Image (tube, rainbow, N blue to C red):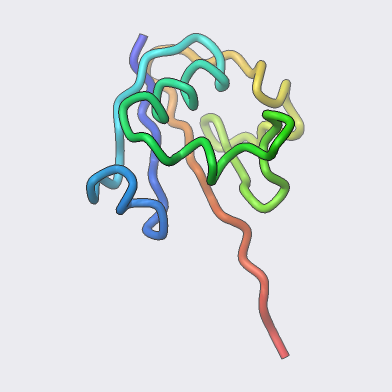
Length: 92
């Protein structure tokens, strides 16, 4: 089942410049692993040393923050969109 992964501008060099990538999977973890298999380099940007999502990366499945769902075990279905959104900090 194909899921569309939206790639943020800062990570597009890893995906060869693509803004979206179609990946197969039934859970978020499978999708992200598939993304890394197709475009090596995503794992270091998305996962910490324990294999959990980095706290500075937000991931949404169909506009829902996975932190409030089932994390990496969040189910995905054909046609879903997974959005990777790096955390932004700044100010005065």
